[in-house]
Image (cartoon, chains in turn purple, red):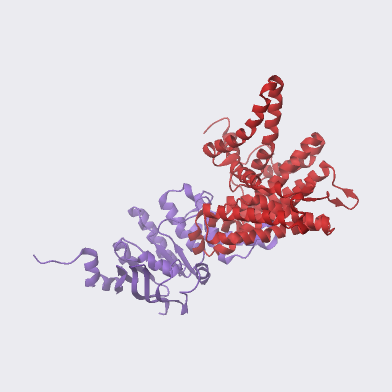
Length: 257
Length: 353
């Protein structure tokens, strides 16, 4: 298996705070990879470095062998990296359909002039991409709410639309930041099924941040564990479960009285 | 053909292209045709005075749609609209009066020049947001007006310039009716363009920048490019409106484009409805006709109480301000939202469920 994303010695510093400290791991093509760790461990900072919102202080991030540390966020999107946010970052006043269509922004060409005239190519493009978006809508079972403004939807559905917007991009690598946060068990099951499906059917490499360890252990091929910005574990779920550092970070030190 | 007066009871569309048509139902087509027909036959029914007012409304609508693309759609506040109107007006004035170029060439050039200058003043928008950007655009207002009033050799300084009404071949648009048709057609084109823009790639990107700029960036939108583009597109229409206004009043001078005008345009889109094309028109008509209707009310009242005329005249500005405040408090969605509510009510009428 070749790695799709290689993180090498990435450090991120905000003033005196080391959010990430010399973190190294790699993600293989076609796997479900989980990033776990206690609150404030630097998981979201890690994703921000991958998607380009943060510039690492040092280190290298290679996507399919290509260095992307210095690339702007929208460039990384065109390479095939999509991202769903932890705190829902949808465009609240737009419909579900428009939110998903926006996900296809980089794949479309029409500009301000051709789009404004809505003839020929621009119109055909809208229709063609509508078909692709409808595939995502069908996949995530959003049919009945496609014309609803996202801001009026309940939380669970908004989370799903958030994932859908990332999927609409047709990515090779999708970064999901706590897609199941705040959901009940049946909603979590549904989301887990979507994640497995996008992995199996759409052949997308998934990077998942999740606090529900049961789901993480069941879904993931590999796991990296962060604690206070340091990588304290990296391996298969079985290895992680036996890793003494990880156990210490999660349930504390065993003290002999 | 289906009965025109009966609404479809469900969605009968079978293809995406049908679903995405601007006028998807027979009803919508008839409605659009009716509106165009009313706009085009209006001069047959109303007096010359009203035609002049409607012309001003149409011009203001073009400008308000332009500003709404920037402020309503993209979320970038601009209080330099007055100066951009001036850029459009002066460009056309200089081209037609000084260089004798035809109005039909000068009009698009006025739009393009304003777009370029607007784009230039849009560059700070990458770093500045909200109030800070508003102050930066205020700088545009001041700088542009300063240049216009001091560059005597080009602009005639504070004295201004005199323009002519355009002609088509032998036919001059010097009558109000002729000029009304020109402005109405340009407004229709602007409405079509803006409506299409909103529902395609660029418009969605604008909305995304307004709602969540960080997420927009992650979805592959180059913030800088789209913000500057919003400034340029918006300024293009403001420039066109400025040129139309200049040829209507047949004079340009710096005080016609002062800060007050910028505020009026902001009021138009606030009262009309941010981000709504139809709202821009409602707001533009409202703000253009408000002083006129207030004056006529005051004239009527003055007939009964001549002593109060002075006092009532002062009330005009008071009412103007009060209307804006009342709208901001009670209907932030603007006239467009009120219209939507009325439509919703009648969709279910007479049963409210």
